[in-house]
Amino acid sequence: MTVGRTHWDFDRDGWPPDEIELRASADAHHLDRFMLLPDPGAVPPPRQARLVAVSLADHVGAALATGGPVLDG
View 1: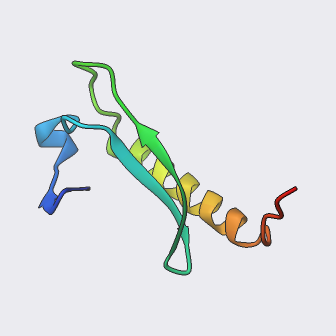
View 2 (view 1 turned 90 degrees about the vertical axis):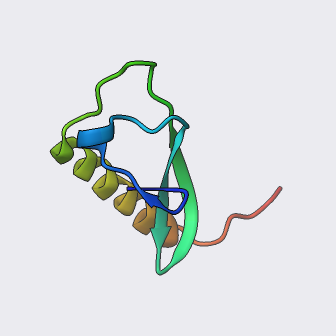
């Protein structure tokens, strides 16, 4: 994970001090995001769970990319 311009190691450093943005993207287009804000002192989830979260965000990005334009009104 990257925090600012710095690599962040969850296993060594725990949660970053600020909220985390997990982007849902497709074809290099940022379509939406999930904002994560852990409870103070919370233990980070295991690596496998973090990979599942990234995979789900990828699926959301792919689904949003095929949804077509949003029409107002």
